[in-house]
Length: 476
Image (cartoon, rainbow, N blue to C red; front, side, top):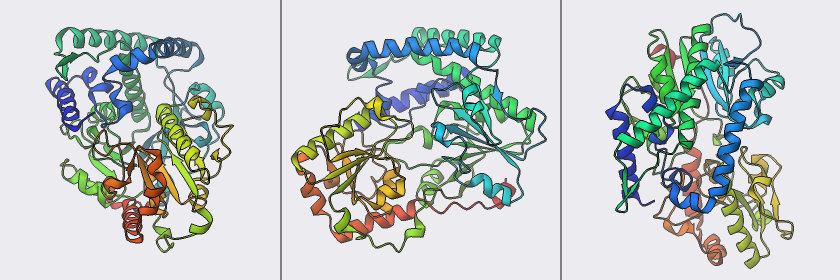
């Protein structure tokens, strides 16, 4: 989507929220929180094209979604799972998400890294709450849990679930009957589909569950991840009524030039009490948009320990090895892989390693790579992938920051001026955007040492080392 149309969409959705600012129902509708100008997000608003192409896929997913929801009434316990219901007061509750079962029993969290361990060293007792974003039931996840964490259930009391469904349906009718449609290219678009209003049920449920946990543990502080989603604002609104709790929102990832809801301050009742950032870059962005305190605590993604690594490291060994870094979308993973297949057919001397996001399984991509001996799905650690490659192809993956910090040459797949989702947009020149596989080798060879060093140093500075200062809690 072109930037002017994207701006119109953002303004349209923001005005709906602002016109009904006290309504939790309006706030809980995910589509009103425009995350960023990205093809995957845009498809949610302009369903005509995508549904015509994938109507069978959409209907099948909708059917199985309803089936899973009904099954949850029989397979899940209400609200949440944790070891002991007679827990003492906890100073700090930390909300995270489980996107892959392999992360469940790790000591470090996928998003926060060693933050909980650092809280413990500061004598701040904390407990981790996981939103279950896997396809498994929370009951099955809980059976595999070995750590002292809390898993949110995929259902609450049946009476609440029925109530939420009625509320969501009424909101669907309200939006379709009384809200002016969005004008897009001289056409009126209605993106208030019945399917999308299922988000309201999920967001209301999770905010209720978190509120119940706050009442149980009576924390002084709550830390949530911060990406600009509806559930984050809804949790903030619900918990602001508790006077003795302060809400910290942790922006943990990279950003693009077209991020919106993350940098959109609404009002004090819907904004966090403090925003925690990964480094100076995002600190400066938030400082321009929010009036609340902004604090840098860093990230587990920091590679500053590798500052002295020569950016020419192992070039002879890895010269023809390429890392493919897609985001957590099946369509993007497929698109990037198919593009690399075209490159591999032209330049057969390159070796490609596909590193999928933890939320994606290779079987979902539905691309046969058996006949391509120079393409392999990676099963090693991220750092091992960095060590064995010298170039990476990507679009919106936050791992692009880490890869370039390690010294790899970045190649952005996509046009420069259309739906730019590049997390390296501030430092990458126009020439590094590619859509023609024939230009691949010339592009790699065109990078000068000065350009590569500039990109590497920018990326090294993007994520500060994760270090928690206890004073951030005392200052509020």
